[in-house]
Length: 356
Image (cartoon, rainbow, N blue to C red; front, side, top):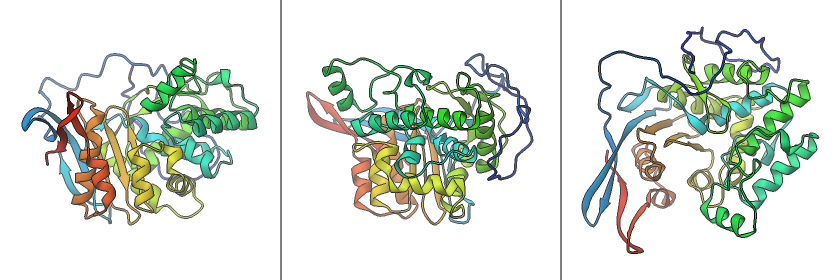
């Protein structure tokens, strides 16, 4: 079920000390269940963010909400409802990685980038996850990620062709889970329950989400990988990414941002837009999430976050490119990110394009 107990906002913290289990929110089950009833009034219709164009015909439309923050943190553009809570999905991984550092785990470079990753399942990703587990004496059997194939379709085909099936270590969140297990082992915290909401590590994650977003957390669910998932608004999500790029050198937040920006192929993969963007625009922090969530922060503090209501991840590139252009970004990589062809008879007959 989801939790709807209000909690008091938490101020920023960089302490490596774990909070007590009673830190302001129910620690009961956090699995999926009935959504809280908000009221009888229908939700307002979200604006169209992307259109599906086939043979010159508008075949479909994708609605959602998007927020752009100016360098000073003020809202520059708001499309749709950018204050309602949403599940950030994997865009929350920088906050989870920061919590791992606050727990005292010493990670840096590629290892820290992988702790914040939705990796593609390429060989260098899987090799490093295995090394991280071995370095901390942790059995791969302790991973509680669901067995899966590599996220990248080409990698998945090669993986299956090699005779292998779905494994826990192959799931795109295995780097994050390896870091969570390592942090728990380093502190003597239970390993079997590292995903429970009342586990000291997950309480640190809760603190980090509240502090980085500047918001309370009224709803907690379960992410696809099994970890607790804290709902915040798109504005809060953009603020969190802005906070990470502007944090002081040496702070957990800045260390995570620096590692992700220095090693973007470990955050995503060689064929992923997050990697292309962070490589082409130095200092940019970019992370996508399931159900078509995206967050980006530029080095001067400008930031954006958006979510497409129907969860169509094929819309991410066109929407992201258009939003960055609205922010004044002009670079060849945007054309690469925006290009989302629609095929007919194995030939290009259309495209997904931004509609705002």
